[in-house]
Amino acid sequence: MTAPQKSTAETTTTTTRTYEGFTDDEREAMKERAKELKLSARTGSRAAKAAQEEAAVLAKIAEMQDSDRAMAERVHAIVRASAPALAPKLWYGMPSYARDGKVVCFFQSAEKFKARYATLGFSDQAHLDEGAMWATSFALRELTPADETRIAALIGTAAR
Image (tube, rainbow, N blue to C red; front, top):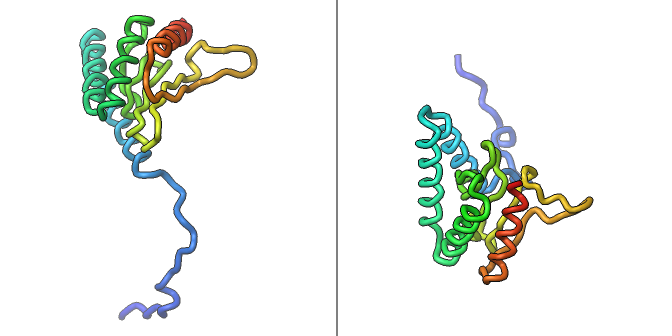
């Protein structure tokens, strides 16, 4: 016995709404995060894991476009000098720096989400509290010596 045929009206659907789910870039970031979690779950010494994490961060920075790469390299150097206790790690495919495994700050390249500027962001783990309201991210189009000094101070405060 064959199934009854559906009418054309029943099989054809017209979609007038647009899907407002994750973008391709967001889905890619989630896939990168899943890979990062698998990598961090592997067994090994703490020192070996730390070396792997830093190598992954440096490799991700090396993949960036020239202007983003130059800023990310400077931010990496500033973080390592200002807060050596923060451990480099990838977080959703972005270079980030963590205390006790929890991300304190991160660098998001302009290219990652097709933005007009890169971002230096801070999580709720950063100790930047200043009254009832404070900035948690900063747009970066270039880094001047004054910007680098300010970033070093922010990183030092955030890492306390």
